[in-house]
Length: 365
Image (cartoon, rainbow, N blue to C red):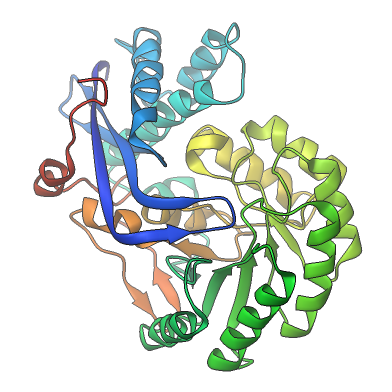
């Protein structure tokens, strides 16, 4: 089998109203859809997403720059293709947009491999489970009032979620505490609650907030400080009883090795596009398992399910609904768990009608 071409398509999914975190105001998400065609008629799919469609041309050119490296090569030899791309980016470096490009191609090659063998990626890697606990992540924003937070928390409960995450990191610590208290009161003590500061705090403020929130029995405190401040995150992790979760903005196994060495997080959160695709995601998860550290995939819910199926130290899947409209297949939530499908490859495929609906012209046109 040989790769014949790589196709891409920019899209944008608008939101009904803006969403707020400690550092973001998000009105839409944009993505670069990627297809890798082969001479045997099997096509692999993946996508990269960003906040701000003006960034899409950079991703597109990065993917295109790697096409000559993999074209006419066998996509089933995933390790060889990864190493070839890794060597190709040496001059530009092994963090940032270069890794996005590798991720899109690596992930699509794994999709091809599963489809060629007629098995899901979870089965191909060795299935551990058929379902995974999910936490609702598509709400409870800093831009919402307490009344809105309580209403949305009730909505998540009515949908069957047994875990949910809210955003914190407002200028006033007291306001954050009040909001968390209101949500905890609404959902009761048996529902799992996480908070995410989206890198919006400094070390001192993160520790002060974290200590005041400990009485609300949080499953984790996510990204309390800037992602690049591993030393600061380690200080916060050492000061608090609540586990610190981080890693969605980290790159490759080398970045996560540094996190583990510094003890900057208790739970790692590798992101498919930033970590470098399926190949690097698995390396990070296994490296964490060697130290009895749990991992939880960041966004990319549909496609991360296959990784959850095969990795024993995953604790939760993040249920982010932003991209559900892109796919023919839909996720199934039962009693707080997402059922992990066993369709061939990554088990989800782009819906042509949705692709057409969300397609946008390139930002420079």
